Length: 146
Image (cartoon, rainbow, N blue to C red; front, side, top):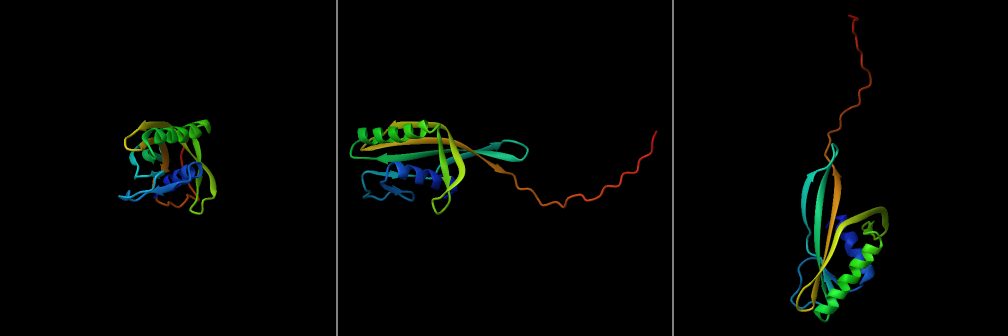
């Protein structure tokens, strides 16, 4: 799991402290709970030094009935939106790093059988791999005047 997904999971748990599933949803799962599947992503060019990856994470929120699940997903979405659609990044110990994730879009959808969806979209920038090249220390230019 990458640091962004872990940060989202930690933030959601701080708002709605229930059982979280991230591998495979078991046959008998707890209610209320949240399920974090793998996100979908696609890459594109960004700048001369970075490339962009756009992520979509479809979080399933489970509750006693579909209405309660939807209202909880909506409450989570509103909390993120009220923080300017930004959440803090955390390290493996749960300490804030000083970096943030800014969401492009937050969407809620009702599901069935006590489930609702909270859909988060965001972009991340990563540096291209660059080979280490020794710095030029001395340049000798000999030029004549025409």
